[in-house]
Amino acid sequence: MNATAPRWASVPDLDTPAVVVDVAVVDRNITRMVHELRDRGVALRPHAKTHKSLDVARLQLSHGATGITTATLGEAEVFVDGGIPDVFIAYPIWAVGRKAQRLADLARRAPRLLVGADNPSGVAALAAAVGRSSRLEVVVEVESGEHRTGVQSPEQAVAVARAILDSGLRLAGVFTHGGHSYASADAALPAANDEVDALLAAAQAIGQLGVDVPMLSAGSTPTALLSSRDGVTEERPGTFVFGDRQQVALGAHPTDAVALFVIATVVSTEVPGQVVLDAGAKILSKDLPATLDGHGFLPHYPQAIVRRVFDHHAIVEVARGEAPALGERVIVVPNHVCPVVNLVDELYLVDDGAVVGRWPVDARGRNT
Image 1 (spheres, one colour):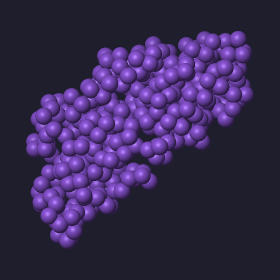
Image 2 (spheres, helix red, strand yellow):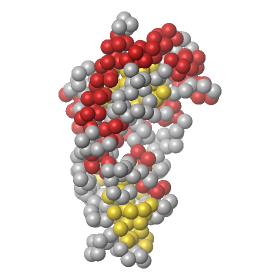
Image 3 (cartoon, rainbow, N blue to C red):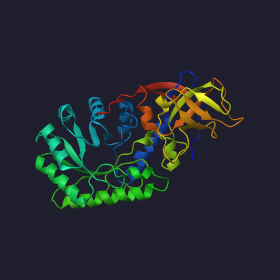
Image 4 (cartoon, rainbow, N blue to C red):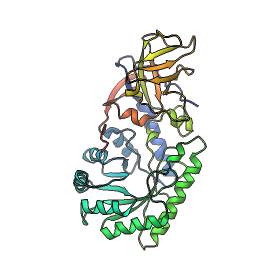
């Protein structure tokens, strides 16, 4: 399964390679996710690592999102300073050295700031950084099948929660990420079940300490509409806002709802059976999920395969009679949109193929 071609053929007035976003499709994607979750009684806290854009975050909030999620302290600094009032750093920050001072400064100026933790030592570092009187809220990360970060059992969740309470910080709840939903098109429902089970078990165990656990936060675009039940209070999908080839292949995103594309130009046709585009790894990235063939998809040339990428070249294997011509502009759907956005300074907004504005990638490169 691949994305369908956009309503427009190309964007003739841009230098290539360029990353373009169909604003009408973005609006529909946000509206759909907010309404689907609201119907389930669940809040949307979208992950901003996908778009890294204040303009997109503001659009999401205006449609009903309750806050945003970031992956790094650097991203959170950009969004807090840009006026976003509720930011969750869904990552177990090790708050020492300069990072401790940055976190303390951010916690003082943020209207609401949450951060993840998955061990008592990490909690102690957070408390030492921000002080007992800080308004910083801490969320216990629970492992639910991806085997990355998070406590491994309800008992460990209790230990982290007790450390949060003893340190004088605020316990906000529990969160998890069902990243194993990306394994295949059949993995989403089992991963969603794992998310729900892990969150409920951790919350129930922590509740025995006699404290409220108001936040049960799940997060992944493939599982967002599947784990939004049974006490889960919010979802943190990110990629849904733009979509990409991987999400379509997994069945997590409608084929006609991809909103972000790379516009590239054919710069060489000298080798038989292939054409070369000017959009290489530094625009498409090298992300190649095991479930996909090639580094991107050309919706107007569905048999073509982006076989290899160099820094500034993409080698596209083409079939006879279906190859784009030298100098032709083509549309490429990236495999994974998140690293693509982080490779450019701005996204060009298009409507019916005409450029109507730009969104700066405000948090580009804010990886620390």
